[in-house]
Length: 296
Picture 1 (cartoon, rainbow, N blue to C red):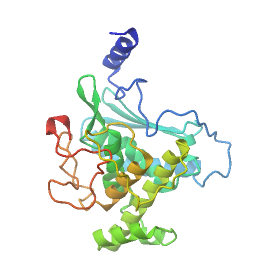
Picture 2 (cartoon, one colour):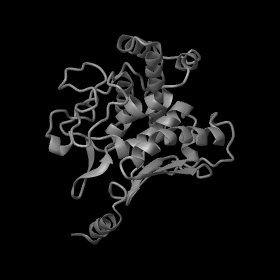
Picture 3 (cartoon, rainbow, N blue to C red):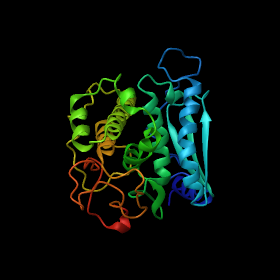
């Protein structure tokens, strides 16, 4: 065994923290050197107060849920830090999420987009199967696609449910395809508006991924990624594939309070086994029908 691989294995064994990739860390986006300091003005409209307010609201929802599991939620709020990323970590009984001002200040990120980032990181802890692979099989962390799906199908809905969603969305221009699909899936006005909000939050994040990859192709709800994986991809899917995942999560009609399962990817989700036709995890990262023991 090479010394570098041995060192990483020993480090991961000692800490049991991040789902171990070659760096020992995992973020909502791939490693990047972009840095947006707190003194940069007019990039977008998220203030420090809104940064903390969004985190406060999600923390109030999920801290008791995590406490009921015998764990403690700790959300690090690093407004001054210009890092354009976010992280999830487990250290003993502490389930940590690290949020950075640099990501919140990126020009693509809306308030709902930022909330979806917090939800994505919580999704690594709570999002269920499929899980990231590790040296020992499946790790503690839901994989990237599942964390995306959890963000809009579960967490963001709880975040939005008591808002005046119809009024909020009355001021947002939403592509016709999203309107059509949300109308088809939700009769209740508030649920319909939340579907629109979740879809547009996903667009905000997808445009972040597009910008970081310097892509010129526009991401759209009606141009889904045509790729079909032969095995579930645990890592960061392509930006269009991730947009597809956020969109389908917003469209899923399974209730936000119906929990997912840590081993069976069908429980608590819209899935092909139960003949759902919308709200499905896209085949550009998800391979259905694999053994439950593989968390698929």
